[in-house]
Image (cartoon, rainbow, N blue to C red; front, side):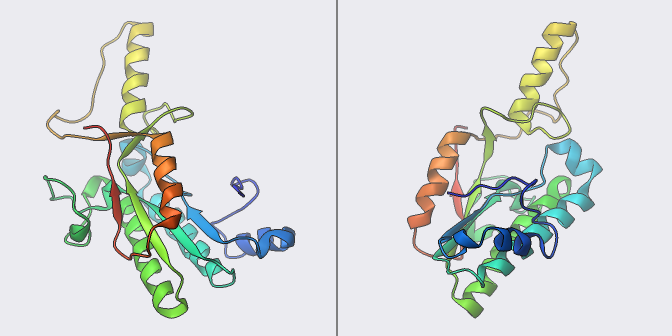
Length: 214
């Protein structure tokens, strides 16, 4: 199992993957699966302040990863999607068949659309190169080593940080939103288990939702 960090493998440049594979020639023929979970991401703060970075960085990473797939003797690629790629006007359960039936919510459009791009890449590379794939769409994650700040953090770690700060500094807790949306939360190790299991799923160009506790 090879899990290079961004300091070892620059996925955003045209030749970042080529340099990594050239440097690690001995492993090239042994790579049978790719799990594409690399992302530039964050909570509502980063979606408001850096939408260009979100679509630019994430789109380039996906394009470069799929480009490399045709040179590897892959069995499969699994991409990790996000619930925010669903249309923003859906208020009921998110169903896989509805993914492209409307625009992503304005607050997360750039990041959500970059996840839709992965599905288009999966379809294109299957049509042209017969590379099989799945996309696993995760709900809100939580767990160890999360990001605990308002800019990069997702909902649950941001709540935790705000409440801890309020206790330490004796101040009020400000929670964004009006309280009506219902969310699901999924423990990160449960998500990892499903992603690994998906390596044995049948090839499917439709995404697969993975929910949590509501």
